[in-house]
Image (cartoon, rainbow, N blue to C red):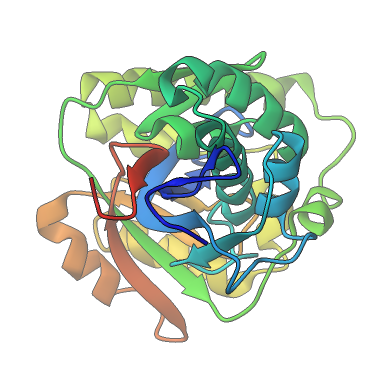
Length: 284
């Protein structure tokens, strides 16, 4: 394959880079997510092609992508860090750039396509746009962050497939529980935008999904409790789990990380300000 050239009339010199994500932030089920500064990369590569069953390849094909692609991931799948969402965004962005499309102009179309493939929009929106995003009705809006925040992520050595985690959720919830989460989601968005970190612990409280999921993940519940006890502003089950994530003051991130259980991997990450990006293989 010729790099930095046109191959069969299509570009092959690109590298698509997509951040991982943490969704729900406790109360905002399927509605708020943040991008994490650890990435997945998609390239045109016939030497190490991903299988056709890979979510990035399926998205690439749906977007009209031609030829083999390679996918390199810097974070584990099945752990609540938005692997499938990032992969689908990566595949769709790769198809766009292969056909000389404009990523900036194509983002709304990519969001809709990725959300339909994923079945929900929070993870894909964070991976596509970066930062912290609120999503509803197929639209995504970034929430401004007036102060620096770090994310401590704790990941055990096991997976939680999203479909099985969603089967734990009830078909109906009470009016009181729905109102509880609506109020806290509104408070979460306002607190993030205002930099009111003192409100984040209450704003991430949940009655819709975490209790049922954490009933089968006692180690993750312990990690959340340990992060809060160590001074995290907020902590939650990341996506469908089993990872836990916590928002912290960057100056205290190491202290919070050290307090988490030793039977999982702990990382201190930044919120990725950039979502999906495209560069040429020479780094430009």
